[in-house]
Length: 116
Length: 113
Image 1 (cartoon, rainbow over the protein chains, first blue to last red):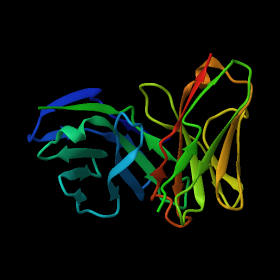
Image 2 (tube, chains in turn orange, red):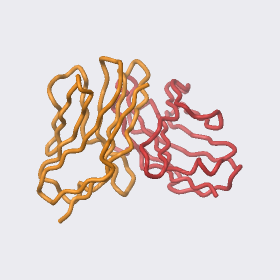
Image 3 (cartoon, each protein chain N blue to C red):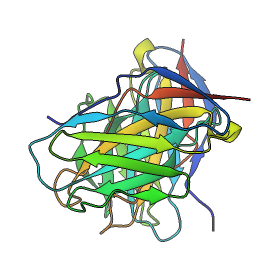
Image 4 (cartoon, rainbow over the protein chains, first blue to last red):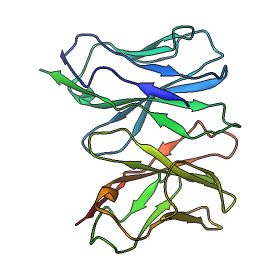
């Protein structure tokens, strides 16, 4: 069964600095998708970034980038120039190839606090 | 363009009762997935509906059932509520051929007393 592990329950960072959130996963599949979602106190789950396993290039979305290490089954999220609005729970998630058991598996989350 | 909407926002029920939660998908989406998020945990997949049928199901008992309507909206029903069913219930919609494009609603907070 696919599992997702986030080993950092809580992290904090000073405004304008860089922080990296860790995620590891376990799967025997070769084609899959990885995600980072942000959940602020408003509860709305917002997609931050998505990575397709067959793409070797790391995904980037403005201040957010990932370090995808397929062999190590690692998928970390780097937030650059942290802003107060980045304060939220961050969930790493895994999904098989969309045509084969496409339920999304989530980690337990990392609570990120950005300090002024 | 309205995103995914869910109703109600909050709900309080008594143990043993039944509850129905509702979800309207984002415009252009025809697949709806439901998740349960217990306090302090990540969401867990309950089931997914496509073409008015349950396409896939997670590890949840039969007390959890659902339905999808011709307009793609969906309901989640939970019978014989237990205290452990207290959670945030999230609905996510996606286009049929792009299941990875999941957009989440704001959730329904269910409290069972």
